[in-house]
Image (tube, rainbow over the protein chains, first blue to last red):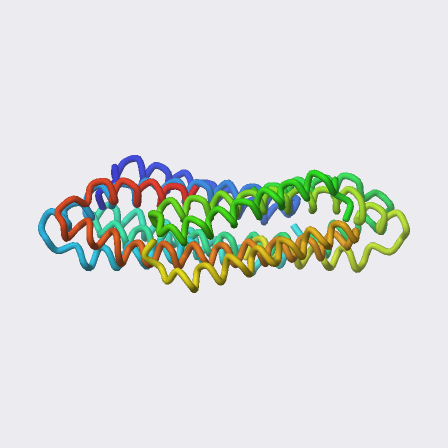
Length: 87
Length: 87
Length: 87
Length: 87
């Protein structure tokens, strides 16, 4: 993976910590909306991690593939990803 | 929380397991697109958990608040949630 | 509809004007990314209109239904809407 | 634009027709949720048009730019688009 490993890992560990927190909230039978808000906050962190991964992918793997004259596979992956993100 | 605790917890534990898997993928320097796909799969699981939490909230807390004649706070929360989901 | 009719109509007319503009861009065979950006801008306007409609719905119809002691149908609609927005 | 002009234009004309319909619904003071549902249906049509435009862009302009040895600008556009779609 081309993105900064440390930065992405840190986000993932934060997300994991939040999931542990939500599991605890469920055990303690906390209020639905508080659980829901924490779930959405965790989704946001994963989304941020994904943006970092994909920005570095574009700037790394995709660029390399083009420079090496073999971009086809990367382009197909990107087209599929775009289509998925817009679905 | 009104949703089935066991079902929501099970989804959260699956998401946590996937995050552990992604952290390992990063350590092993796996391919960006594979990391990205796992990140999106984990987001989907959290989204599913959130849908369960909110469906039960509507059917539980919101209904109770209306029946007890004090729906104002719940309605404001719902309006804010709707606005957030559409932003 | 409870939202300000004039405000929502104005947004819709702007969106319609943009669609006319995009149809012209297509006739003139303009660049894909310019067409795509205009399409996304038009989606944003419709989204904004929808937020206004739903905010006023919560504050109007839903409130009335609760006050009149018949909230069931509105609550079912809201639950379905929430589920749709999160899908 | 590389996408099938006729197909995209047809979708846009459908969307425009729906907007006209929604404007009429507002004049007739129709129910909020009916207006909202039509607004979401129109957004879906524009989204579908955008997917067609971008799929053809990937398969056309981006491919050409790579083959002509000048992919930089297209790649920057794609990176920006990805980031926007994930925001």
